[in-house]
Length: 85
Image (cartoon, rainbow, N blue to C red):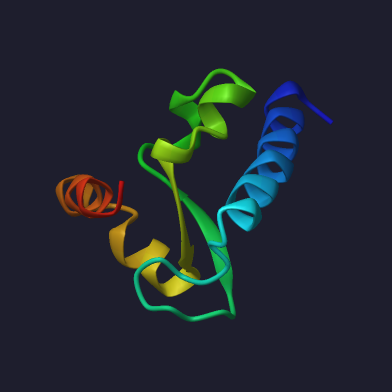
């Protein structure tokens, strides 16, 4: 496993615990509980540490459909983060 993959794996475990401890277990946009994924404020390649990847203010729990809707629209992504974080 390369370093980037190892960082992502560690960050995902940290995020899961953080979000569960905070009671965030459904999509933060739609409220759905199925098909959830992490949506980062920026592309993962711009984060260089596990701490950056698992920073609550840099991540939302959303459905895959929401993630795909915002993935390539930087302005809409930033607006969504400002509303939710």
